[in-house]
Image 1 (tube, helix red, strand yellow):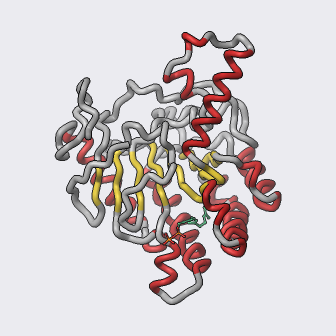
Image 2: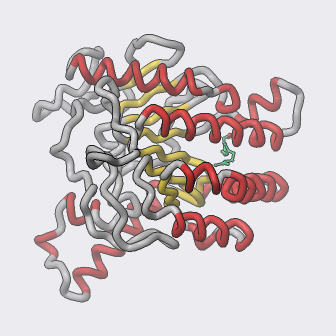
Length: 308
Ligand code: FPP
């Protein structure tokens, strides 16, 4: 994904590789019928669609031109180092930010939020850090269960969930199943996740469809492949937020974020608040409202313009 520096209001910086302003044309997969993620029910409600009349679901407000925001939560270690605290304390404070941001996103009416909580590469960290992160994930699933169920949040997980230890996997899968019919917001945790790995998994699934005669090779198009991703029920990602000022995509949602805006803020993840989320959503919504070309170097969406 090309990263094009652009200027924007607030402390953060929107970076705009794509231009599909509130575009509905991309194969969203909202209604796609791919297999459910582990622990999920078979027919979840569409994400990002207007709430039915009489529903308690908060409508996405007019100003909010983002249906699916995804966050690379970076800087826990640096935050801890700055405070002269152990790294794990940084992750603990990071978990606090997760709670605040999830609540804020739901209250704002954001239809889908995806959090990069543990990458495939994170398994290579020291054992005590990995164990500490697993404990935090366990605690999150247990302690936020009521918040998630009471507020109609649908919890999902993407990644190699089977690699998680049982004490995390069991309550996680239980909550995924129990929250499957939530319609207020879909919260997706990327766990043991890698973007390239997920592309390989989707390609394998398509190959299997060809092998079993479900699909002919000439029928493989973007929509057919999109259906094979664990994210197929979600709208395309239209905003990626990364904390701690970094501009790398770090193997996150590579297929799904083709037309996403990239927003970075110098705040470290433990410092990221509800106000920061609002700034990011407002800033990117405003640039989307202004249309292609409102940010220097932005992809006009015209053929031949790849935004680089
Ligand atoms: C990056 O910080 C963050 C992570 C590797 C994990 C994110 C985990 C949490 C926010 C806490 C637990 C999650 C949930 C959902 C409860 P880093 O360690 O790479 O920071 P650094 O780059 O400053 O070293």
